[in-house]
Image (tube, rainbow, N blue to C red):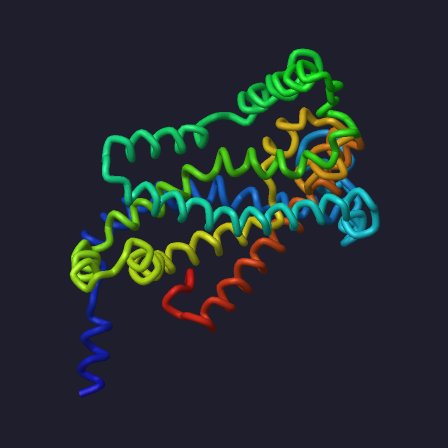
Length: 317
């Protein structure tokens, strides 16, 4: 019987339908090979003392192989360690706030009696997501400008002295400014994701809860949040996977690239940019970017493994 089944499996031939599927997937395969896998060849630059001498391939083969020497500066220089610290601390906070605030706002909007008001609030909160950090930085500059900024004008009108918001004296304020700007720009996207999930919850759950005398708070804690748990975990894991990366626009464009604010605004991405622009060391910059990718991959695997042990159904993969 087993031999008959094996013969039937072997007798299966390549059909025209199989050819159609291959041809349909071919453009996607080519796209990934060119734009996703072919650039991985450039990771080897991280292990070379890159010295330009002619074209790319000529430079690649003539540059000296230095192994992990390019990675040493990430763990030996004070500026690099400060950048790494800022990146991790900011992102850990962003992961927490990126779940708590959007979920809270999504639940609040879903409970509004007026659907039109809900749509207006949803659109208003989602709009900053499409705005460039360059544009946003000029909006912020209108408030923080030393000469004509709104905040300094208010302070002066009350008899106080203006503050140089882009200088050393305002260093302690910038972590709060960075966090506030990140919430302003990213909350709308997360809120729409959670709101779509809430909309898809079967209304019979809430109807049964109302019949049993459940309050809005009880409906939220016993129905809405438990049913949002899986998407919350997925969004959190995706955010954890980028914990070694930072939004370059937020940390460079918003503070105007001011060196006096680097102790609280310089992250790994900004540090790599400054190293490439100032020193021109392509090997070290590539090593830092390679470290970010590997560290992010390991972090997301660990986070998913922990979630699997706690609740396997909520795991990302």
